Length: 298
Image 1 (cartoon, rainbow, N blue to C red):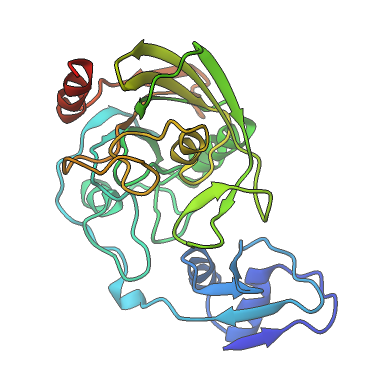
Image 2 (cartoon, rainbow, N blue to C red):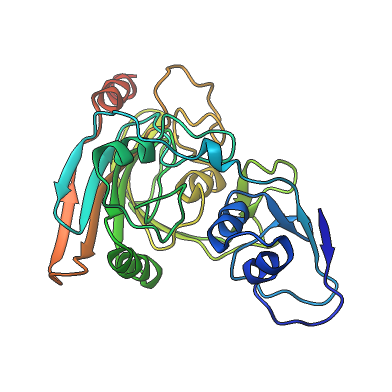
């Protein structure tokens, strides 16, 4: 289904589609978020303001009969109260469902564990304030109601929600600290990948410091100032020190079933209700340590 904007209507994309498709706002927003709606051949946001000559393609519709269902799952809950949870996600676990993949995600496990999850991100991402990649392990915060979700999202946007990662990268980094300030956008040659580019890109800033150096690799601590898709993986690849075991952006052939050597070690934020500063940390997984030992002993 295709729509062409012939006048400057100054209307949001989701509002336009609600009127045209005559379906609920939540369903339209889910369709946009899951990439079933393209504006000028590109994925857009619900809040995008339509302009004259824009072309909208609706390339599919969510099957709500296949929506996310609760699944029993062992969750590593680092902290929980009436308002939020902090989860230590294992490597290999997808955070939330996407079109065509509605099972086996962290969200499925959360739905089995509790009925109290925010709805701000729609029915496919209840409670999910931010995500980490499937093959990245570590901490993320989950909101139990929309007000808490809104507050945490604002902290994420204002850069007061802090995230620190541990990563093992290829090659020796000779300087002790560094900042990578390079915009990230979709790779025009491979739409599944991101890259440093000035085409339809967003500002991305990554800070790192060296923890230890080995013969052919470096263990670093990374702090995100922005939160772009695959940001750390793309930025480390950009400076010629890709994350080890990264099947997409790495140089070396992946030698184990364990995911990329990237772990979300620490998260810090102001509690939306108590207003107390909260910081949580968790050690790297055993598999991470096993691979690290191999590189230490090269």
